[in-house]
Image (tube, rainbow, N blue to C red):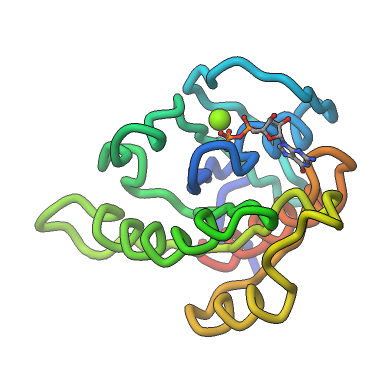
Length: 180
Ligand code: GDP
Ligand code: MG
């Protein structure tokens, strides 16, 4: 049977979450395999990365914010027709964890242009900075419970050490493949 997707399916993947949780660092780790302690305010942009499964190739178009989440809500076009959304929080920052529900709601409020059918989207929750063991404020069970409640997979990552970063994006690519 022919696969339902074209060989070079491009998908839109958006990074959501409070400022400083590590959205840009997660993308840098995944795309360039690098990490920088001190970073300037993000330049909003998107990066491409291909993930291959046998004969299928999913091109991930990774959208990053320009830091506007610090001052204002993100523009609807940032969310619009995203195929996958990562909601990132910082395991050492409870406020960022409490923002997860807000972003979950915003996705559904903005994903489809008005008067158009609902665009299907998959969501994953990321607890980042799991290398900061002694500063940790949110335990695995608490985060996993929230993710289960909203029916999303949960990943604990470190952009610093690279732990689970590739795995999270591969799971995203798989989920997108199932949407095709
Ligand atoms: P953004 O505002 O969500 O894009 O966050 P950034 O990627 O700019 O990261 C904010 C700060 O957290 C920077 O100083 C990063 O070096 C740091 N950071 C990001 N990810 C990690 C991580 O996994 N572990 C540690 N220890 N620091 C991190
Ligand atoms: Mg950033």
